[in-house]
Amino acid sequence: MTRVAIYARFSSQMQRDASIDDQMRLCRERAEREGWTVVDAYSDRAVSGASMLRPGLQALFHATQEGQVDLILAEALDRLSRDQADIAAIFKRLSFAGVCIVTLAEGEISELHVGLKGTMNQLFLKDLADKTRRGLRGRVELGRSGGGNSYGYDVVRRLGPDGQPVTGERVINAAEAEIVRRVLQEFTEGHSPKTIARRLNTEGVPGPRGKLWRDTAIRGHRVRGTGLLNNELYIGRLVWNRLRYIKDPETGRRVSRLNDPSNGSSRRSLSCGSSGMNFGRRSSSGKARSKLIPASKPSRKPGFGRSVARSTF
Image 1 (tube, one colour):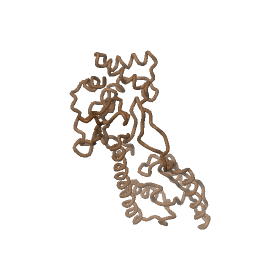
Image 2 (tube, rainbow, N blue to C red):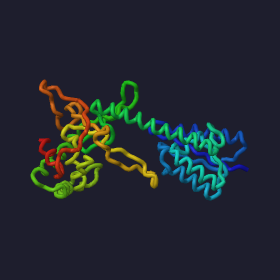
Image 3 (cartoon, rainbow, N blue to C red):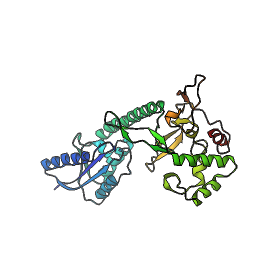
């Protein structure tokens, strides 16, 4: 009797849970035709194939180590992983445990599949990243958010004419905007971020994400442009592509790295209609500028952005 464990995965929130059910159904039909016994099924929903830190996949590994499985059945090799190094490690690990991999798309997996399909999947990930980055730049060109959200803004959730979610739009949260102005005003008056945070907590003012205020949320990081005092969005300047994220091969978690300002980072001056708390600079004709310009290193000297605070009022 060949004991089979089925593994299924889909990677995007845009996909449906039915994708998992479809993969499971097709795999069970294949197992029935082959006369295999399905002893368990594992799945990961809305989890990237570039990461090994998936509950379903880790549970599958545990089952193979315990000797509960003879064969792993999946729809395709990229369901197990899209990362070239990870898929090689998975194959090596399962081969050591005496467990075979069979997919509906490729059949029984061998070293040749691992090499060729691993390379193709890795190229797919790179191509997907390039297309995503291009789409984000187009969104920023329109004055929309390229990702994430700042305190003082609410994300707009609506559907477009095509029925698809519209992304990147945000509006000013009036109550939080008053807190931003207050923080900047008090800082220009000489109060430290720690003192300001203490006052806000004493008054019961909710901080970012509803948590308590901390001086780091106010001070932030000058070079990375974080915190209320160093976020250029509060002076009507949207900065995009300041950071890049790479995967730590040891932990599988993403780690941020600063981009070279001369290599693709951009700043865009926002007009009132683009949801900047402060208006962007205007030309002599009175029209708001919307030119995307290369970002340079912040011109402010250390001091937690005093120039930003002054320019806001």
